[in-house]
Length: 342
Image 1 (spheres, rainbow, N blue to C red):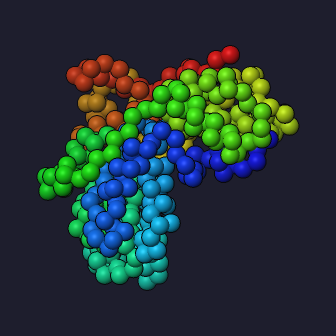
Image 2: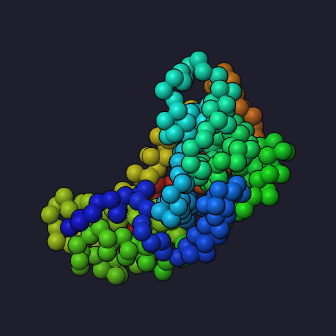
């Protein structure tokens, strides 16, 4: 049933993207100067989870690398590399410049010096989940180096701007902003159909079933593809000739659980403490959460940072929020989310 499993993976970048022509053209125009050996503006790509921010950024940079010999690209997941040091180290590691760097003893300034002295091809640096950086000053470090073009990916601009100093805010506000909205059901259907065409045998899933997956995913392409992948994987294991309705019925719940677990596993240590506070004592308001959190850690982050953490975990369906900004309370996400209807 599965002809090419790569096509069903979350990180797969297709040869053609569906329903994002305007965003692709916008981002391409921002990066175009780098193809002529000139500095390019920083690009900020924002939108809810599952709107294709990472996919589009990687798609555009891959097209640039195909068209221009002396352009490279590197990708950093700032949720995993959430400190300034780890982000800079990851970039240098991609350049092959970390052989004599010791993580425990090499000072931060040495990493900056290495980047300043880098004389390789002009490079696009994608900082994914950039609002996860404990010290967003790394954006300023890179912004000031003309040999690099930077793409900053975040869910919300305000979560990024609220944690940077004034000098960086002014630079970021003058950057090019590429905003992505949630997909409509018809657009999700087209995205799924393209994945089916590239990854599955013919006639293993119906148009009606794709419509139902799109409806259950509610605008989230990552979830829609996850449902399709989960259903196809189960049907393949059971040696079915097609994806049946009974397999599809439970696929949405399984896909959500997998995505949620991946997001939980990705939480940085202080976020995990905040999550555990809500799990143990919720529903709670931000101030109560902060009081519990502060008692559990030796080096507490600021209230503003904890509010950013709560916002991030809500966007990724790890927590849910109810109420207005004044009386908002956070709790664990209700597990009874919609399934794929019959």
